Image (cartoon, rainbow, N blue to C red; front, side, top):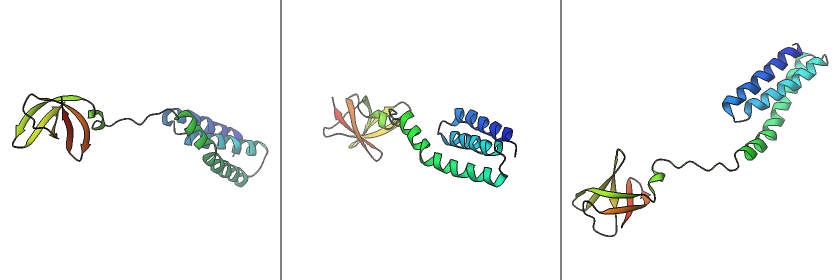
Length: 138
């Protein structure tokens, strides 16, 4: 295979990396450049494919973990919608028997507190147990 085909493949992989950002296409692209070097030296397609395969393995085991660690070292896990409720204050909207409920956006949550709650009480979310929000009365 002509080395220009390997170079084009390598550049396409590097361009594709812009859209994925997981460094897997970069490893394949760099390996295509290695195969292109072997092609330029006049080796057979088997040597080119072997060089590409070995270089992909080496890059996946070395370059990719280093790049992921470097570029994503300060990335904080994104809190889910449920986790974002912790620490917020709400008004009790409904009380049925010994169960109280609050409304958060479009969701209605059953809440538990140490104190007895009534409609209009202000509560602060402390933690979540299953589908129940544990709150403290303010």
